[in-house]
Length: 257
Image (tube, rainbow, N blue to C red; front, side, top):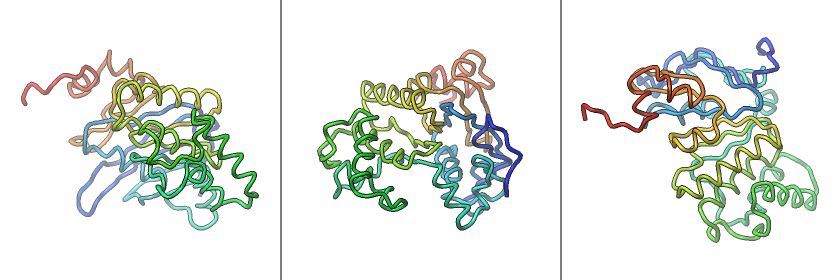
């Protein structure tokens, strides 16, 4: 099933509800992601950030609602239609999820082995090119255990780009990184966004990264079971919509604690 097409919108989430058994994580969430932007999903622990991302990439089925990816509903698509939607997505999971028994080059070329019929030489060249895009030229033959955490995150982004997706989803890309390495990763995301025109959806709660990379964001809240704020980082910092939003963006402890 297809939605009315808006060339400026690549993702449209409509009345999305997520549940684990009888527990509702969020209820009737709706928002759009524009083509070419870096869109951030943020909020406190347990608010459903990663759950929302997993719905958007088709890992979870919604309790209610629809998720349109470039005009097609990933929640209801089956067979070849679903595969066509998934080919438009690249995903970097929080821990990177690189295969330790493979080199970085082999990790990046794995999606091509699974989904293309390219010859080995072409896959090697493309994989090396993706690693070069994220600043990992010269370490193609290293194993994940031989590189730093920041390099592993960049290698995971390179693998997510292997099939030239229109959308890249990053789950907590800065988690576990020191401030300098995190800032370097932010710059990599911005450079890829500007040079490749890829749309990024980033789940994070790291304020420096949010201000560095986000064009727009939504903020989820566990108690509200949904979106409590949307806008640019500066808008939410300077004009918070609730006391929680103000405390989050100004790093203030709860006075009742």
